[in-house]
Every structure is written in structure tokens, then in C-alpha cells.
Length: 229
Image (cartoon, rainbow, N blue to C red; front, side, top):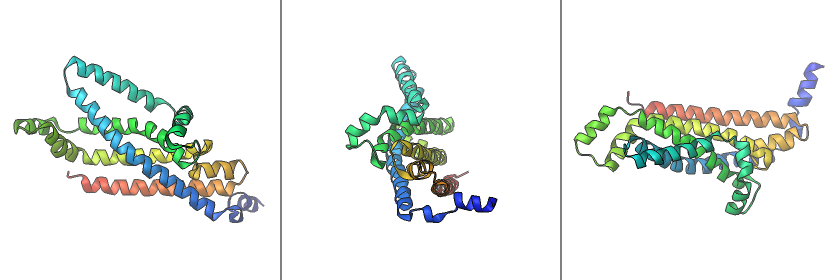
């Protein structure tokens, strides 16, 4: 009887709509990929700015660093479920809708970009100061130091940061689904929890885990290949 109850609750595939599950998975991937493109660009530039300001000894740079650091910490500290509600009107005006996968993208970017920026800053800080001093001694310009020293030396850490941020993004997309963001999280809540369809919730959870495991595996392989040590 216990086995029948489990099957009825969690393995009753007749209550699963394959098309809805497929579309939810596509929406999750769409939100993640599009948001991560912007997160990587914005986060990298913001992290580079934080790193540059932290190394600048002028009072003006210290003030700018403190302000930027506080703003970054504020957005990193706001729970995503709260942030998406706060930015709902902004997202509606920006993309023309307040529901669906597209509507969740602005809040995903705002939430994850400061997080990745900190990882970029940390990655740059871990670059051996001796390498930077050698670049200075050879007369390298600031742009040359960035593209020929900072980025190559910190590539494994930067890729690791992208992997971590992407996995975090998957969790954010699941939370976005609760308030109309779509994706596997939305399907698990609307079709699974709200309609007491545990099979949908279970399958959606498994698919999210599969996506996370794939991202982690690919990220780990890229980090290993880029690590010259």
C-alpha cells in the first residue's frame, strides 16, 4: 500500500504534460543564458572598476570605492524574491510585461551582477603582485596589464565565478517562477504545488538538478583546462 501511495503521488506520469515541461525547461534556460550574458559583462566591468579603485591611493578613489562597494553589497544582500517584487514595475516598463520569462530577466541581472562583480574583484586581487610589478617594470600600459596579465592570470577564478553565479542564477529563476516568472520553478509551483500534483514538482526538481550538474561539470572542466599550474 505504501508503494502504491508513493507511485500515485510522485510517479504518476499520466498527470504530466510533456509540452508544458519542455516549455518550462526552455524558459529556465532562456532566462539563465540571457541574464548571464549581461551579468558577465556588467559584473566583469564592475569588478574591474572595484579592483582598480581599491588599488588607487587617492582620496577620491577611496570615496568612490566605498560608495560603489556599499551599493554593490546592498543589492547582493536583498533576497531575490524581495528584489523581483521591488523591480516589478521597472521590469514591466523595460520589457513591456510583468509576467513570464522575459519579465524576470532585469531582476536576475540586477541581483546577480553585483555578486559576480565581487568574485571578479577577488579573482583580480589574487593575482601575484610580482607579476604586476614585472609588467610595470616593462612599461606595460593599463590596458595591456588588464588583457595580458590580470585576465590571463585570473582566468580559472573568473570561470569558477561564472560557474557559481550561473548555478545561483538557476535558483533565482526557480524563485521567479513563484510570482509569474515562468520556467521550471513556475511549473513546479503552479502545476505541482497549487494543484497538488507532486509528480510535476518532482520532475521539475530533477530537471533543475540535472541542469545544475551539467553546468557544474562543464565549469569544472573549463577551470581545469585554463589552470596552468
